[in-house]
Each structure stands twice: as C-alpha cells, then as structure tokens.
Image (cartoon, rainbow, N blue to C red; front, side, top):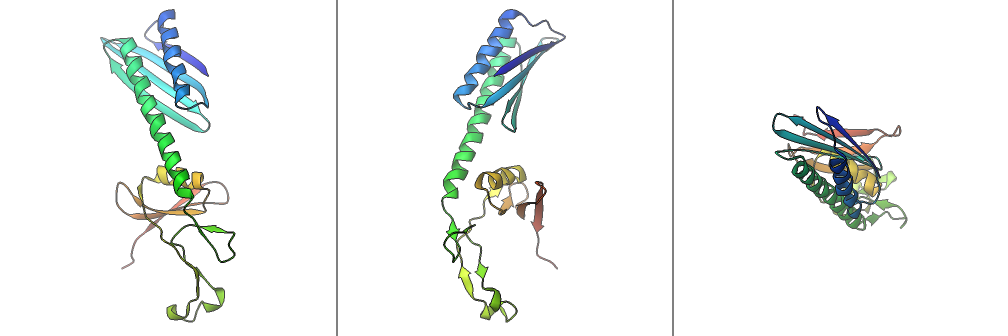
Length: 191
C-alpha cells in the first residue's frame, strides 16, 4: 500500500510520518486489497486534524478526526476506518449468504429473485384469474439506502432489487441499465 502524508500549515516530522504509515499498514488485517492511503494533517490553533482517504478496488473509505494531539487524532481516525471496513465486509458477507436463497424458473436453470411471479405468456390478456403462474416465491423487502441497494444489486449480480428506503420508508426499485448506470424507480400508488 502506498501511503502519502502531507501537512497543511504544519511540518510533518519523520516520526509522525512513520507512525501514520505503521498505523495504516494494520488495515490489511481487515481488508487486503487497499491500494493507497492519503493522509492530510493540519493544525488550527490547538486543534490537530487528521484526515485519511483509503482507496480500495473501486471503493473509498474516508474519515476525519480532531484532537489536542496529532498522534491521538491519527489513532482515532484509524479506529473509525477499521469500523467502516468491518461494516462494509459484514454487509458483503450478509449479501453473499442471502444470495444462496434463490428461486429458479421452470427451466430449473435461471435464478430469479424470490417473490417474482413468472406468468405463462399465453395466459396474458385473459384476466387475472386466467394467469398461469409458472414460479413464485417470497421476497422480503429490506430497509436500505439507495447506495446500499446498488451495492447489494452488484454483489448479488441481479437485474433489479426492490427495497424500502431507510430514510423515507418509500418503496423503490433499483435496476442496472445497459450502459452501466443505475435507475431508481419510486413506487407510489396513483390517485
């Protein structure tokens, strides 16, 4: 991992630089694929500020802390980053475990999100009672943020995901578009 330490209104001593590098090298215990770390240290009156940005395969972890001592500010910012990385890894592990609960279509090969009803094409247009249901399942709707839903969508390698917005309780569908972008639909009952 490449660690860059810069100082704003502050001369970074060799001891402080080596302490920051040693403290951030421990992050490999939590996540082995960290490419670079950018540390910015600054002093404003009696406040010592440490800001760290860790770059890992397509993901950035950022944390800032202010303390009366630069070494304690570095310790606090490193602890925050460790918690962020652990939460991120826990979410990915949970998503992988729940990915095993998939429903397959009638052909036995195509995995489908649970709760999705597959209707036989010939039964469409004849009324809801005439629909031939090929496959069904349960689809628990989780409370997530839009960012969490997109990360889960990528992790599970699905076409879409239905979720309840953690902030508003509104039901949304997030889907991957052919150009690689993501669409978010807000589902509301029409009046």
